[in-house]
Length: 302
Image 1 (cartoon, rainbow, N blue to C red):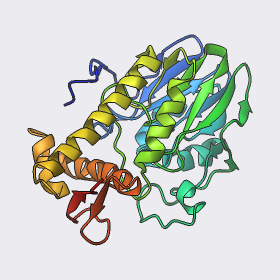
Image 2: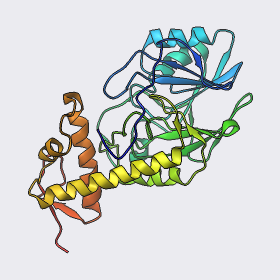
Image 3: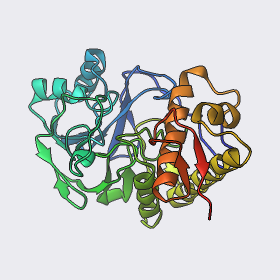
Image 4: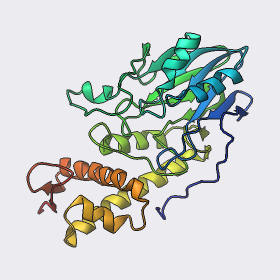
């Protein structure tokens, strides 16, 4: 747990039940709780009558049945996908089969890295390809609602946030969550991109965030700035480890994440590795050999 960010873990839900968040926004939560998903994937529905669905969720027919039953008599015209982790996008295929609703997203898993000529290892929803590929600034309009897409690489290279103009609300997917920090796992996750995306969000004037996991984030700019401070603190802690002779990632995690749930140790190692890559690329530290999660590291002499 971090001491520099105030998390909100009071979120409660009844699985499979559609609830009204605002007169324009509804939410239904999939029963896939866990150390990475908190209480589960929150699928948002925006509009009335002809609606948009944001992050339809995991490959779970029970969740899809509950979603479509709650929308009986309404039409899903758009499926907006923030990114292609398996708790967010796989249900889009099931929803499309039953409703014909097209999917909108940045691209397949790893799309942001592939565009840079990088190779991304297998992972995520490898089957997802959006019907409509969108980029930052694209506008998606429906009956009574308007979204603008905001590309926020970092958690994944194809991560998008969706800004609902009518309520000045942002749906940030997993890029910013109120219950926890976000895992940034290389090679698709990129700490430099993540920090740049956070800085960009901190300069926007969104009134509220609705993350896919957990409850809303009020005063989001203040919260995002706190996340940036936390990441800077983590970087400082890594450099302090190196100065005190802790030179590999496994030992750093044991020192920095005391009492961590064992299920999250792998994620912590990858998150530290993402900082290590960023520090290495900036010339602050160097590996004893190739940059690798198992390598030994040291500061670069100034």
